[in-house]
Length: 218
Image 1 (cartoon, rainbow, N blue to C red):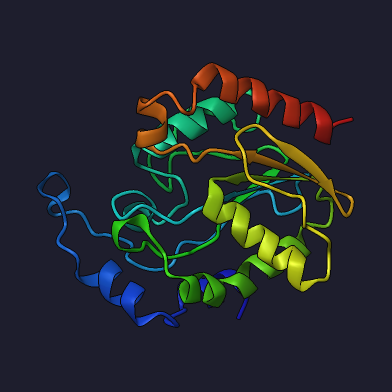
Image 2 (spheres, one colour):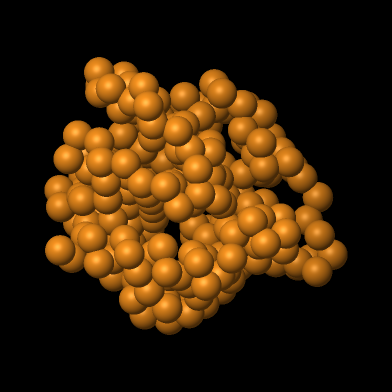
């Protein structure tokens, strides 16, 4: 069984299994068959950039079966990645829309949709081996972009368990750190709350992504 098959078949977290399979489907999606399983990473596993998000949205990745697809967070993120040259199209609407990523792979700290978008610590720890293996598979990795504090903490937990010094590494929007040969970039999550309040501005985020692209190609 390969990694993606292991992820899709995982049932380690009873709370998440119950939530993703029993929560009521909104009327606007009535009649649609939800994926309702763990959501794998997507993109170029041999790319230079790894992007780590929080978890699939119930009506986004959990519905469509692909990471950052079919919700407002993906609308913001994919259009910005397109402007920075990381995708071939500016939208992510379904698994068969033709979206591809250029020189990057995108994954999640938690592979299942959690209630209220808030994972428990033990659920994140259960998912951690999957993230570790994805990182190990990225043989050309030069940079990691974490979207939000939970993704940041998940990545730092992996570094800490490897004995890497992360004492002075703190989360902040548009900060970056060089750690053990990999540059870590930090951004707020592209959730509607961050976007609508102006905490994450489109033009600033695109500029940040272009700086990342320049770095990985240097």
